[in-house]
Image 1 (cartoon, rainbow, N blue to C red):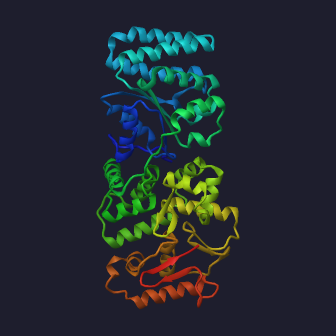
Image 2: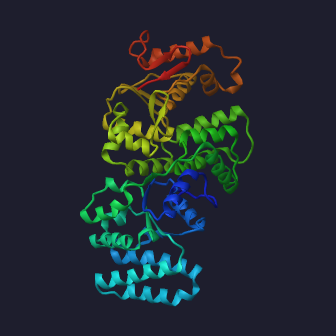
Image 3: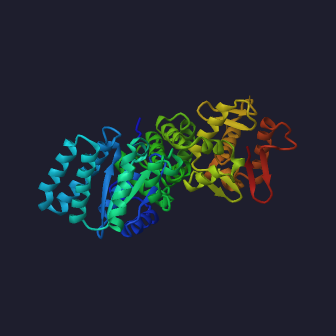
Length: 442
């Protein structure tokens, strides 16, 4: 199972995010960078370091700390600072080694803090200002560091002003974690400036897919690229998982539209149990607070505080008048979570892996291939209007666009309603939208 996202050299997209952090960094302002799991925060921060010329951005990997205590934190920060000093000021390396030795030899909190304080002063002397510490994967450090550490970080900032700044990169907002008085001193520095890392746009997804295809020696058609972006919706980890799932079937040869459609249907069925895709979904789900999960399970709460936070994280999106969950794969994962909580819940559920359809907790009688394909397509775009052109393209195939008329579509819709609706004469789930098409509703 391939869990970590392997990005190409350089940064894909995120220009607005980069400009925001750079602007804060140049002003010596602290800020918080929030991004759900496997969104590419580390690659983003490393690129920030490599591209900062008029100030010094220093990347600190908090995941590399062997323990969650002040000594491990100070040593991790100092290693990063010492590397930066060695690159820019080789004449200060001897003093840098002395600071490192002092940190390791400190037998009490006071000596440890004094040694680190000397290190900060040395870094400020030899590195460009502002000096910006990029604290990557800071979640666990924030939860477990000794209280005095946060007071010290605040004191360093107060003393050096705009010459020193912190960027705390986390999967969850600092303000949503348990906050002690001491943590509050650090949080106060970042709270006014919180940036949620954006997802990829379609062009960004295409760039990654081109890199992936060359690396894995597979071929992705234009329809493949659309399929990948539609299902991952710009989440890098999910994008890679779907690339693996699709690439395993497509291989290297070029294909025609009919072959693409058949492959996409097969992959879509498999994604519900694909280890990589479901691992990504579980990590996103685990990163959310309980009230955020509840808001996803009940989208009628689209105006409460948890739903607003989900919009800020780009997990909820607006589609016309509807509020939808990003990514078809994650939306399906959420629907399965809802079904597991309440197996008798009203509405439709499709187990794509088993090819089974459930309505109001009851199994639907066997569907024909066309009926199932129609229902699966509408289910993938649940609560969104699907016009007749897109229905023909995705159910019959693009080559049938000129052969399938409105009457055939309406007849197929009627057959599906007869099998899933409590009263097919008064449709509750497959709704006609006058002049636009059809949509499947919860």
